[in-house]
Image (cartoon, rainbow, N blue to C red; front, side, top):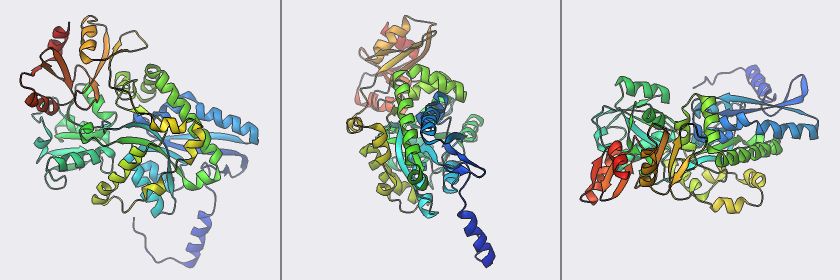
Length: 454
């Protein structure tokens, strides 16, 4: 907002005095309670690729335990204040106001966080990563189940809902440009919060929806949408990360280190007990566990690792021009924004090894009713054979897209039979592209695929 330049000298003095007062609950001791320090965390409960720095971490209590131990050593009482938001924008607003110490958000919001912090002289730092997908599969464009749209080119002249400034908006812009569609002139973009966009799609006031985790998977699971474009087709990493105010990090590096150690423990918990983690997140957010597992499972769309990988930093640099073209940021010094000193120290001697680790090959997974674990299969056909023998007992089945590797619900995938091979795809356009290159491949329903596999 613009403010009038006309101020009295008294007003200026008062403003300066107010800015010099430590903010309560933001890494400093409260007035009247010098022995208590409140650390405020901004998170997005339903953006479930941030759970190791938010929803799951909160439920496990790891950060509180780290701070309790620190408090005993220092003779100080530490308290954690968790603040839940739908997107990264309000977290950034609160951070630049000095009211949130640590926040988590997606890659595009992280860049806006960096830009706003610099602009308002409240610099922030990217200090760790939560979940990532090296091809971009965390974002998906979906359309209604009864829609006639079947490919990206069909969006020309249509109304598309997204959240401007989000990673999902970046996926939309990039995908349209690759399809020679001008994202500003050839579609009508609706700037909406995810829940509003989902309702608009259902009501028919939007023809398609481009959103981040977990909205596309949720709508597909609920039979309210089907995938139109898999963000992994861009083959450009997307991720979520943790940002901290620079002044907080300098004032309380030990507390930030405690947070990152707690995040590492939450990450280990998720990777070692993925079903239990999915159930915990589902309980806290109201999302179906099957949807949470699609993204956060053992072979889910996201990989969880706190290290700041060079590929993710390189992707951030490629994201800057997209945000600049939308006039959401100016220049962003990504190298200055990224600060891996704290996570390196918290991680320990294994950081260099973990930094080079990469996700394993895609697998298919079957989750049976009444079981607290999933069964993994090397091929989709292997999963289908087992699922066919467990009729009525299947809670969820996940298969990787044949070309991108993006996991999707087996019963929502597009299936092709190519000789004896049964091949799943997230989108109809990907299946068509394969069929055109492989004469003889034909579309089959999920039930037909089950029968053929058995």
